[in-house]
Length: 543
Image (cartoon, rainbow, N blue to C red; front, side, top):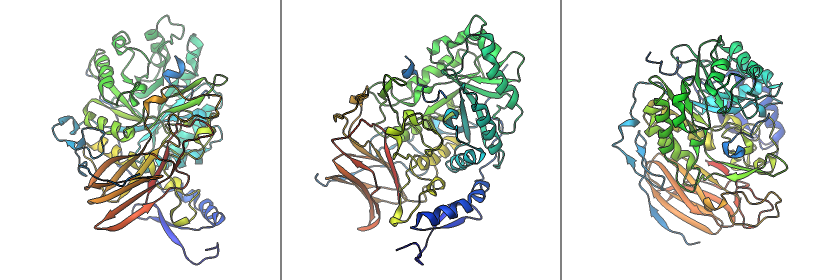
């Protein structure tokens, strides 16, 4: 059908008491024109979530994307699977069809508010204006994210982008929350004057309605790194006391230091801890809470009233050569890392104040859950075409430019798990969904790539991963090239896998012998002969 066809498919862009229906045209110009005409309305029509008050328990008495600690130092089969209940039980392993662990009392509500933030790299926002921030905030809010942790570096222009972010946050009801995560791989911190930028941000935004505060009305401040900073004061503790405490508005300082947590007892300036590296296994093992517990033990040495902010991340791959950032490695993201990590945090939610998603937009390390927008840090070679929001074109109709307002891919999973983390109860599944992810080529493939195969490539396996949200028992059939497998699943969540084979991928859901839906995402394929090494993930969702 051409652009003048009379057939129109409608999609709900915004839910709530007055959903907005927008016709989707095959003609891209028609869609883009309508998108521009409704831009202001879309941004203004933010999603309402319950107002959250003051956050953390009170005490009892562009240089972006350089920041990771490691950068610095054929037959068809039928398989039965037991699934997670749709109503609030926590899976006890990462295998397809894992059963819930009903004995873990920590998944209950301990009365302490829980919140979900996403780490946002301001250094990737050079072309952003206030409306760009509003689009991201709207998408994040729809995904159940309460706010952004703003990774701020040393570029002079970042202050303007921060100001735009705080302005955009005010357009939401309730206000979209923000807090600073100062990037000490970018900001200098050896001399006294180096504290000025940090102190200026704190002083400038401590009274802003969008600034996150704890329930003692202290401004929440975090960092990426900073364990070597002294700010001319002779020691780490004295340096950070000077930078964020002395003569400053009251702050709750929750840094992300890369140091042994047994050292924390020597840093009373800390009001809590954020453990960046906890989002992935750092070796060829499975994700667990063991290292988080070590961090929590270290925080507890500081005394009562301290808090823990836990990371959750879907992926990790970076591919910079020696003439660039010189970081070329993966962390293991197999066995449904994102879903599995969320389930671990939910099971231990009584020990966690904030779950921080790593990240919203760090394209250089491939763990972005948000849209690809703004500036990329020379990561286009492995991010272009790899939209983790899971966008796809249904029925051949043009959706480009609109998908940012649909909740698919890893953000859809985020909404489900974020609600469970906040409330302690898994939400009722009301819509059938399948989320697919996987790498584009075999792990041991050989490519003509001067950067070389990434370190730790042996840790991953060549599987297509599927997370299924099912409203009733069904059969899921996964296909990758010539490989096919069917799974009998029951109502709830299922985590499935299929060995990859050269060719495209597809997924089908059937009930009582009748197909519910089937989708084959365009561009999602697997090869044995890639032109370059790319261990990033395709992400697609259907229907």
